Length: 182
Image (tube, rainbow, N blue to C red; front, top):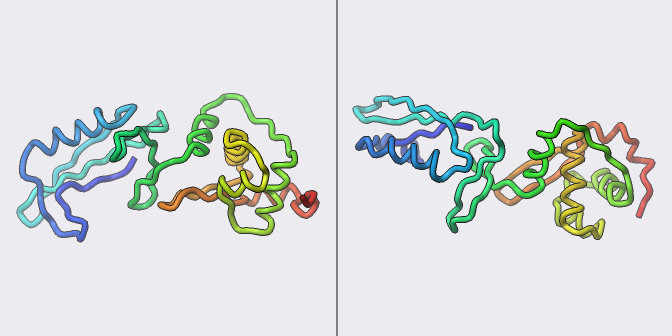
């Protein structure tokens, strides 16, 4: 979900839209280039004698919504401030797990202990760093991190450089000082 202004340049000056073709382009983008298609509505504004279209895209209840990137590949994005950021496979797993009706059972084993201890000493961790420390295959590392996010033990931040994972305040309940040191 979010808002899009059509007819406004990046520097904020008003360019305006010239024709009804803009409405067709909006509809094509919402239905042909998004999977599943997204719902939106358009409000027309006049400024400096020019027409500006405000497109409000509704937040989708069917997350994720995929869109084609520059190479034609379907990618899921998340909106952060004024940026569209590609979502990685961990966050896709989080969204899928959040739809489940069943709870999660988390077993704190060696890999989780390594992760918790690392986050006790460091502000955040990447998926690749966790894999390197834990020596886990990609799918297991993704499942551990996504489970911990779903339980509220980890939080994440998407940036244009990737995704970082942080300990939430809930992790303090698990007495990180008592973790085994590997």
